[in-house]
Image (cartoon, rainbow, N blue to C red; front, side, top):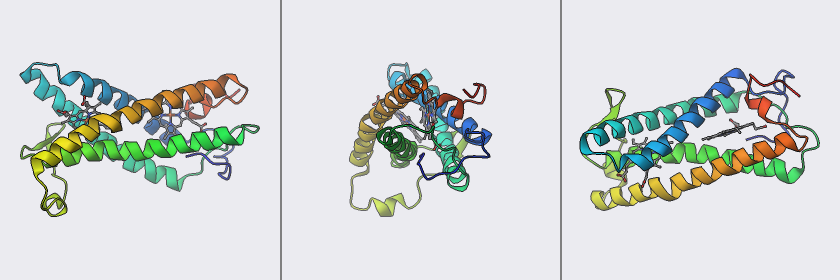
Length: 195
Ligand code: HEM
Ligand code: HEM
């Protein structure tokens, strides 16, 4: 969500420590969720139930962390992009970041809705997460089983595949900028030296 009009964050040229922490924790969690999502279908019944519980709990954690991250993002200044970066690349980075935020909400929300269409409790690290509020009213007239299947399909693909495509584009963009004279990695990585 970078833009040429944003101001420099205390002159460091970096995101704040909290923004960096949230970026990397959420990024790791999303990669783990995709790997778990794709592999859990082939596990035997007992292991499947445990792993699915971890997938659901971690996915809901991403939802909570994304709410915190968006609030932080909207209330804190962002570092300005490196000078001389072509306008089209600034625009592309901005579009990818906005789409990331959309998917960081849609993926866990679709999971929450599809679980809420079933009758079993929704696990959350050993506790029980509430079913999606007012879902019966919102989906009045629809067959819950059919709706659950449709949302399951949307959750796995196209949403998960769009996330994979964005991650590939985002990493390729970050690496391209790193080596074409507009380094950006240090902005999101406190352990890297500012060039
Ligand atoms: C960023 C968050 C999430 C990501 C990236 C993610 C990703 C995935 C992926 C890649 C799959 C495999 C789909 C397939 O192979 O068809 C999957 C399946 C599944 N996810 Fe998620 N998920 C997320 C959040 C959630 C949440 C919050 C819930 C529930 C509250 C959830 C519940 C499920 C369930 C039940 C399945 C198995 C569906 C089936 O049996 O086809 N996910 N997820
Ligand atoms: C699931 C994985 C990832 C997601 C969802 C993600 C998401 C985001 C988002 C939304 C931003 C914009 C900052 C904000 O507004 O909060 C961002 C910035 C950034 N990300 Fe990622 N990211 C992921 C993985 C990675 C990886 C693996 C790298 C390393 C190559 C990386 C490097 C960066 C850098 C360097 C920035 C700062 C861009 C700038 O200069 O403004 N990200 N990321």
